[in-house]
Every structure is written in structure tokens, then in C-alpha cells.
Length: 78
Image (cartoon, rainbow, N blue to C red):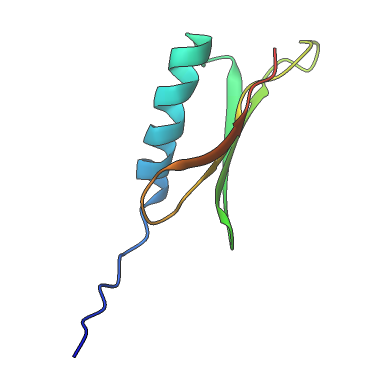
């Protein structure tokens, strides 16, 4: 008889904490970004977009595993 552990997905707050820790490490101050979270079939998408539309470049974009909180992919824009 095998037992299957059903792991509860992480909350949006937990996912945001994972993304913010990496974003702060790479960008320092992240207060100039609008942060959006979107849960999808492939995990959580966390996107950092500049608040000022005149700013060139952008912030990081993450895909994070919803069960473990591991960063699956990330892209940095300067």
C-alpha cells in the first residue's frame, strides 16, 4: 500500500516572498516596480514592471513552482 502526500500549493504571499528575495538581491531597491502575480497551470508567474512608463528596460520575471517555491525560470531586464 503506498501513501501519496498531497502537497498544498504555496500561497501568493509565500510565492511573492521567494520572488522578492531574488529581485532584491539582483536589483537592490524594488520599490519602483509594479508587481503582478498570476497562477497558471505551469506555476506562478511573477512580473516586475516599472511604475514610470518613461523608464527604459524593466524588472525581473519569474516562473515559480507552486508546490515547492523553487524558481523554475527567471529573466532579468535592465
